[in-house]
Amino acid sequence: MRKGVTLDEVPSSDRRAGSASEAHAVAVNGVSHWYETKDVRVHALDEVDLRIDPGEFVCIVGASGCGKTTLLQMLAGFLVPTEGEITIGKDPITGPNRARGVVFQRPTLFPWLSVAQNVSFGPRMAGEKKESYSERVDNYLDMMGLSEFRDRAPYELSGGMQQRAAIARVLANDPEVILMDEPFGALDALTRETLQEELLRLWRTTHKSIMFITHSVEEAVFLGTRVVVMSPRPGRIVHQKDVRMDLAGDNGEPSFQVARANVEFNRARQEIDDYIHGLHV
Ligand SMILES: Nc1ncnc2c1ncn2[C@@H]1O[C@H](COP(=O)(O)OP(=O)(O)OP(=O)(O)O)[C@@H](O)[C@H]1O
Image 1 (cartoon, rainbow, N blue to C red):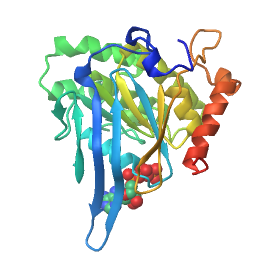
Image 2 (image 1 turned 60 degrees about the horizontal axis):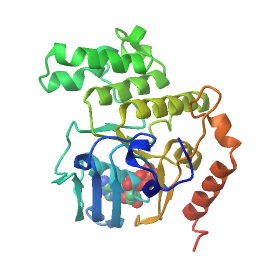
Image 3 (image 1 turned 120 degrees about the vertical axis):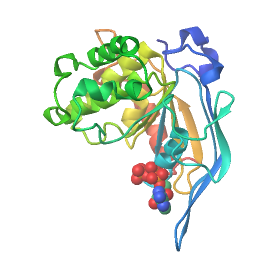
Image 4 (image 1 turned 180 degrees about the vertical axis):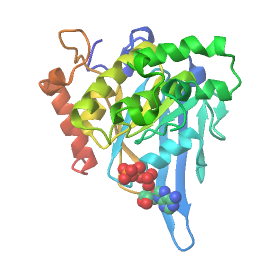
């Protein structure tokens, strides 16, 4: 995939992951949010406008407490904005829905179910027949390298494997959008890099839209097609940067080793870092 070009310059058929239709575009329009507690009113978000096109991988970065999770919870339908509206296609988001899968920092697997039962949980709860979901579940277990652990209990898996199972569980619902809130934040550096590379492969295969929250600018530039920078609270979008670049290693897959030696990658990191720290005017 070419790098260093804007989304507008690239025909949609040539995007790093690009398919689907306008029907699944996410639009955040003029969203502001205040948390009201007994004695305080916290202004968390201020007039946020954001669009996520089908197949995009959008990373959100910003200082702690700037409202990243608040925004993600609204996209998930867990929280209603005080002002503004969020739509998918033409429909406003009015509550949680399988079409929007959430992966949290800590994997939230059911401890009493096996890995495969966890992954098939959504389709089973939705009343899907086994014939309809079993191939999909097997496929995602395989993609996440969990086939041979399918009958194990979650506690028998490492943290990285549990997070893989949590991702497979979301994918088994065949969501249009995957919302990830620092999903690799609790993992050791090596596991984190492996999962980042796996997530990129998975995203390119599945063509899902992803919104990914992280504190790591390096992670955002490596994974994303676009990085969105939020200001300190109340969170506003202060910068957006297209960060698609060719970071493929010898095996043709994006690699951190290649990224770290890439001038454009490091320049993008620096620019985003400067915006986070308010050094850009
Ligand atoms: N339920 C709540 N009640 C009151 N204030 C809240 C609530 N949830 C979040 N806040 C406040 O809203 C602001 C934004 O919080 P949010 O968790 O969205 O930020 P964040 O950017 O995700 O932070 P972090 O990077 O540390 O996870 C913070 O000041 C936080 O204290």
